[in-house]
Length: 136
Image 1 (spheres, rainbow, N blue to C red):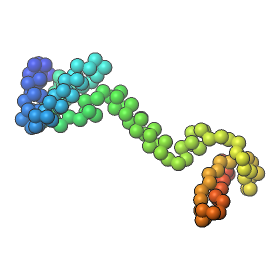
Image 2 (cartoon, one colour):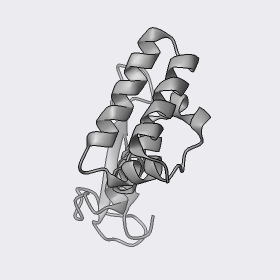
Image 3 (spheres, rainbow, N blue to C red):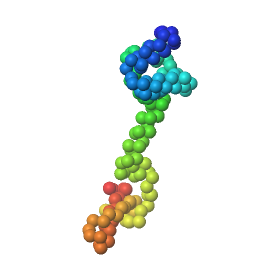
Image 4 (cartoon, helix red, strand yellow):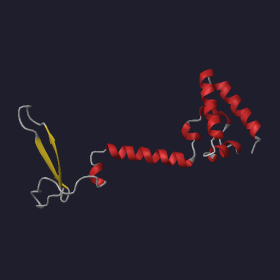
């Protein structure tokens, strides 16, 4: 575990030698912000104990500097966004109305969902596709 001042000099020297002026200012600003963020003690500890090699400071990303809780929150948000893009999300999460307008021809229940699509020429009516939530 190095002195904070020694670690600060290491970070500054590494970033100054590897980055352009604009990149240097941005990276140093980002590192400083994360080191002074009271809700991110993980990064402060990682820097103080030397968990990052000296040559890594110039390439640290926001994910590297974020706390474990923040990274977990980001992963959960990305997973939720990916699931919402899937076409059957509403059906799997119960956001779809259980009683539909149409009756299933197989099981005779009205737990159906439907959508309409123009499958023929534009002067023909739209085709209705019905899916039974009970038997598929």
